[in-house]
Length: 213
Image (cartoon, rainbow, N blue to C red; front, side, top):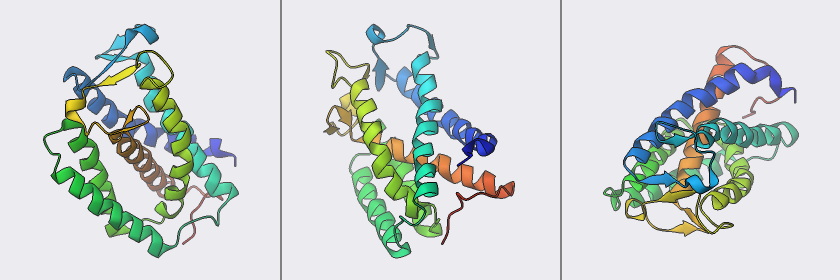
């Protein structure tokens, strides 16, 4: 793959998107919409976030989207049709809008779904070709993401590392993980992919990772 050749646009996209999500994380930590259990942490915090949480926004997008690009490289013809991709995008948009409209008072639900609605709307309008493979990649990415988040939310430990104020979410868990985390994850990762592709094309990088229509 020689993916290291793209380290500049790749890390820039992760950092730019990550800064937005870190700001969101800090605000919600101060609002006590979620918090962190010192029992399982080093105890080093900055702006209410433990050092482990800061690293999360670098390591998780890096590893997750690397899975996506590895799939693009090794399995370039495994992709959805344009019609199927558009159908999924529109369906996800409609479902998320309905969930959002009826849960605007819940801050985590409203913010995570609001951003997901926005990115699904843009995807439905512009029909970016990257989604044809990313939707499939995300199914694979979701497996380790689920395991890591389950560990953080107390599936394997007596207490959760990350705990939530369930009055601010749907209180629907996938295992021990709030449903909203799935929308959060998708939005963060796909936003990074879109920005990376924009930067890569702008700088005229050539690669076998290029998407084919």
